[in-house]
Structures are given as structure tokens and as C-alpha cells.
Image 1 (spheres, rainbow, N blue to C red):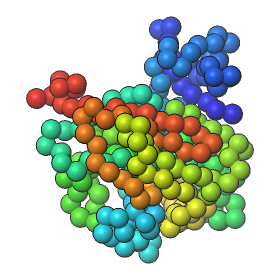
Image 2: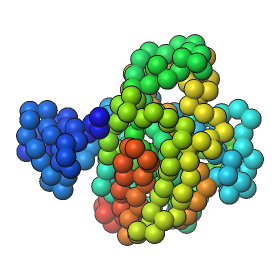
Image 3: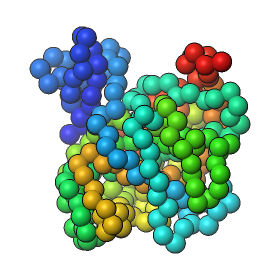
Length: 252
């Protein structure tokens, strides 16, 4: 089942997909265009994988890591489907990253790879925009690169884990202004989902609402003001965001 969180009729509602419309928890049906799409889950801690696709690592002149390269992202960065993402006026190297987002559903501590899927509530899509102008070095994707407000659209749907039969074999695609620019598969991850859950839970407790962004394949290109970016993942949906400049956020 596909779940969403939306704002309409002066309130925030949980909703599910029903025959091309949204069915609110109170039973009302609304059209997609008549709501504001919110992040489909309440994000807790967000773990983000760097260089988790070898082809993407090569694309930006790095080798794939021998151990997961993980950093954290704050909830301030998260926005929903159809949102604006700000491109600062001093940015020259900003690109999207289509990523499968894994949502933890149970408290996880010292979980084995063989049991890892039992701890997943479901999946959504993330677009982990990156502004490489602010990158300090390979080992330190710092706050200014990955934690800027509006830099991480997620959604539009949260899909139950039971409805995704093989999360390690999903097609990921990105379109910029309608043109296909990224085409990959989750099967090409360096560290797969069970490995990541085992790895993270070996030294810290994962909690319901924690999210793991699993990296992006090759095909990232720069985006500019006015660009419409759609990141889609097979079986989950298509997430749209629009790049805007400082003026739209009352920045000088």
C-alpha cells in the first residue's frame, strides 16, 4: 500500500492511494493537485551513504569505499513532493541524487544480515541534492553540503515493505525538464541493504522512523534555477522538485 501525508482543508491528513486519488483517513477523496504534499513519514535520524554505487564513485573520480561512508542529515533538510529546493547564488556545482530510502520499523540492535529485512517498515524516494562547492574533502561531507534547508525532498509515497518484493533490484531514474539523465538499478549498490542495517546496528541502536539513504548511481548532472527534477524508483513512485534561487526564499 502507498501512504502519504498531505495538507488540505486547513489540516494535515494521513492518506493512501486509491484509484488515482488520495483517500484521507476520514474517508474523503481528493485529487493529487488539490493538496500540499508533505514528507510521507516523520523523519528521525537520517543516515546517508556516500559513494555506494561504484559507477557513481568513478563518475566523480573516486574509488568505491571499502567500508560504508556514512554521515547524518538533519530533519531541517527534508521537504515533500512538489516542493522548491533552493540553489544559492554562489553555487556552481549542484546536482541531484536519486536514492532509495529505507525506513526502519522496529528497534534494531546487533541485527544480522539474514534478519535485516524484518526491521524495515517500508521505502520511499529521496533526492539528496549536493552542492559540491562546499565539500571539504572525501572523508568529510560537511554540514554546508548535505544539511541545507530544502536540500532533501522525499516522497511522495511511503510504500510498505511487503509490497516491494526485491528492493535490491529496482530501477532508479531521474528526469531534468523531461529529459532522462540518470538510469540505474539498486542491484549495483556496493553495500546492500542488509549489510547496511547489520553495519549500523552493530555499534548503535536504530529506531522506528530512522531512514537510510542508500546512495545514487551514475548520471548526476548539474541543475539550475527553473529546472524541474523528477526522481523515480520502480514500484514506489515519482518525486518532483523545482530548483529556485535566493529570491524565492527572500535571500539577497
